[in-house]
Image (cartoon, rainbow, N blue to C red):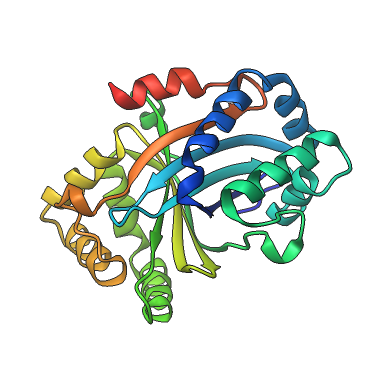
Length: 262
């Protein structure tokens, strides 16, 4: 979604399994040792918010999943981050190539997500709940041959039942929901960003135990298109926060990580 002030995007990048240790060290260093450098680099690229999660699937595949809000398009923002002549840009490009096997300074390797849905709660009373807001980024691999049917389902629901979708999100204290479709050499993924008041696994459990029509539709879609059983934690991805930054308050990774594990 693009407004006069910002563009919101979510996307994923694969992680080479034998690079997990160095990847975690890299993000720790960005949050601590090199925080001033990365703070300036992101601001220069027009980034306003950035959140990164490490996602491990039940089959042990690993991904980095990103939410980014910036003043420019995602394509322009990623070029400014990875393709400039600055030393910070070159260093980030080299490290990301180590973790993902992708040279993100080359346009053909940059993620190009297709927006499927962007919803934000506007009702004033929710702002008075003083909820602990927990952002989540998650990627779900689409089962082979199911992409076109999934896109049609989301489009049809958006046109005819968006009011029901909004009520479902409100019932489960979701304040923001973005869904993007991303084509990758590893297959198609739906990549999402959620802002909610609870942990991801608790949100999945809440929807799994719900018996409403839209909850049942969501549960059936999760099984059919992603092979995910919301009532079975073993089929859910494991998510760990790596990075949370905002251009107005700076780094929030450590304090948010504590909230996620409480």
